[in-house]
Image (cartoon, rainbow, N blue to C red; front, side, top):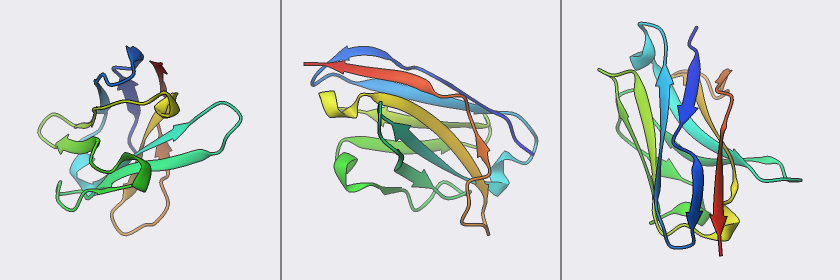
Length: 119
């Protein structure tokens, strides 16, 4: 089992940048593929970015391609989301999630961190 805690959210102007962090507990962090999701008010939770257990093969939702970068540091039990060129439509609660590498389901979730982009 793994517990996840996000940080790094905040208020930023359009065009600015933020870096989200997700700290994971447990000794088996390197077994989990990781993802970032977001949920805007009144909308469903959407996938943002994912990365394999080894750190290779990052993949992104179309709205964030070229602007967001997911990375991980297995030695620090952490995953990151660097967000550049932020837009007001990126405003949402951002969640970190984990899934066992062989599963398609994200079974573990953090509590979320708010990102607000002002125009």
